[in-house]
Picture 1 (cartoon, rainbow, N blue to C red):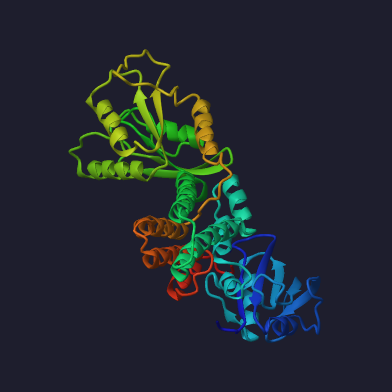
Picture 2 (cartoon, one colour):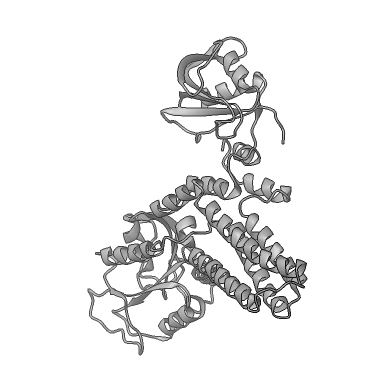
Length: 446
């Protein structure tokens, strides 16, 4: 790990009340003294001071806070300079820090140093990264708990359980001539079963609540002219999509974000799904099908003022084929008009007029999203963590057969692999490439 001093603007670009320039490394303190022309700063105290460039010209009056290592985010000497917000001032101070001997930090390099210096583990680092982009208050609460080590504690618990089971096996190998409990295999199997069920429960809960982390995706589907665009406009509370009586007006998917309750969701208005001769419209319909597959919630819209036809039946078939495992809201629209729609076996969750009042749909969406966080179980927040748990479960599965045949060396091998897989969630030192890729996705200055 390099020990040079890094610097970056840690706040977003744009006009704001303050901006923060962060430095970390052995020369942070001396650079702060150069920029301020002050000889000393009290550890962990805010000091109001002028900041100057390399030519001695005043840049700004700022607040400087010095954090002496190892009691800082990176466990190195850290200095934060809080200046007046705006692009020019922050960049001028950053340039002055670089001129004084720092180098520009790479994306995620502060967090990466915190990891290598033992200040945080990977689960805490990922929680920090995702907290910045949290799409709901519930997600923020989960991530805040993980920053405090809740997932790390769970990983250690599972790891200790596997090691405990492994100890049974190692004792049997090393002391094969000794008298051991006759039901030892059954005891080991029971412990493995319990552990496997715990991991499976955690994995399933994490997958079912993925929308909390990434933001729920909601697809609105239906045949042409059933009111999908009107529904989108009503949910957004402004006219985002063109509304027309001409079938095929929406020729591509339209995506917008809106906050419902405590959740920031992405709503996708899809092109009307039907057999299309027009090539552009056909491509739009294909994208609509992709939107259904990628969504967490599907809103299927039917026009109550028209008789059901083959296109409506096609929508029902698509729901069965591509949304069987998704949350669905089936809506009869245009209930203010004389009703003609009748389709055998069709039950509606809601009936409304999308041009007038969609409050019942908003309440339904909020209830679905709130229910996804009804559990206090530990949640895996990244595909990397999910893959590690799957790998652990796979090794447990493969350990059963050698356990039954009492090939305990092979059994122990699989359990050791399971321990490595679980440990990789918090501290996989052996994979530098993976670490570079993960921290490279962080914000600059974080």
